[in-house]
Image (cartoon, rainbow, N blue to C red; front, side):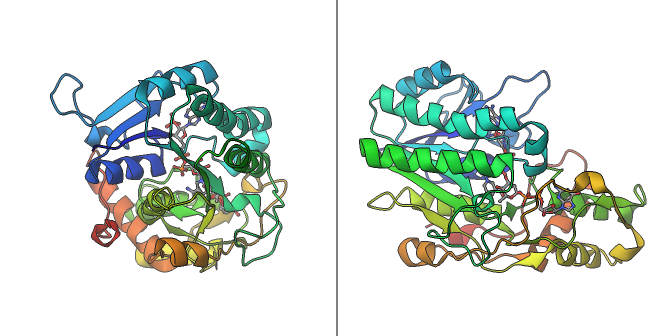
Length: 342
Ligand code: NAP
Ligand code: F7E
């Protein structure tokens, strides 16, 4: 029997990789997209099929996490086996500028999804994209039982979503799972997150079209993994017999400066010659160190991250150099995913 999945945030980094994965597994995939005045589907254009053709497996629906009645209508109509709630205002720094909007979408948006499923009365497994930002000031290593201490409006909104997901599981017996995701990156990473900001700049500096790169705090430690591996972990989390929450992380933490050095080295450059400080990239409250303990996911799901730190920096730099050389090329990744297709 063909399984059906509904993905919010399908146009984002993770949504695009997850859509690919589920299509490869034979799912019918439905995605929520926002109406925009310009095209916002560049990450999934290569998956698009004309809905007039026969045998189409991917369908896109306009909607927004701020619109509960639309979500309820779509959930009742699609009746998916699995829902992946990946949509969010996901930028930590921006959440300080837009705390109310972040609370509405990243926080209440999750409740709207959960409530839409509950009211539709459908038998659906739900994956909530929770985050290591919920741990905030709690020192590493962070695991499923580490106390939350969020340090941003984004982190606080995700803590609310985390508890709503658990509450719907406990109150209504719903199969609802939190994935506590540590940072994960890729050539499709949004251009204003620090890894991609760095790797795009490296490509431009090497090409001679950019000379300086302005950054904020270089001392923060992050546990950076590779996004395609994390969407595999999301899917595995929904295949378990019983719903429970899982940390997904590499277990390796490096500083922003170490990632920076690795990225510049990958192009034969020295970051000291190009990087300048700009305080606008500092956050009012910073998360100093996130290093995850994903042993539960390894034990119960057989999931283990294999790409991190310098290798990740290298593959993102290579991709940005190629992208600059061949503007408009289709998305491509340099690490084989074959081993993840269980
Ligand atoms: P992303 O690239 O920023 O994608 C976010 C997605 O959410 C986009 O598709 C965006 O649509 C959509 N979206 C934003 N506001 C929306 C709204 N009001 N209604 C409907 N859709 C909306 O994020 P990502 O890196 O793929 O992350 C996926 C999820 O995992 C997010 O919930 C994020 O908070 C969480 N997470 C990510 C990481 C990470 O390191 N990547 C770590 C922990 C947790 P547009 O394309 O139209 O903007
Ligand atoms: O910052 C520092 C910054 O914005 C990483 C999201 O996916 O992961 C992500 O959130 C670090 C921070 O990611 C710049 O201060 C220095 O310490 O790439 P980022 P993030 O804040 O860790 C979590 C797990 C999520 O859930 C989020 O959705 O880098 N940093 N200079 C900078 N950061 C940015 N963006 N820009 C700079 O110029």
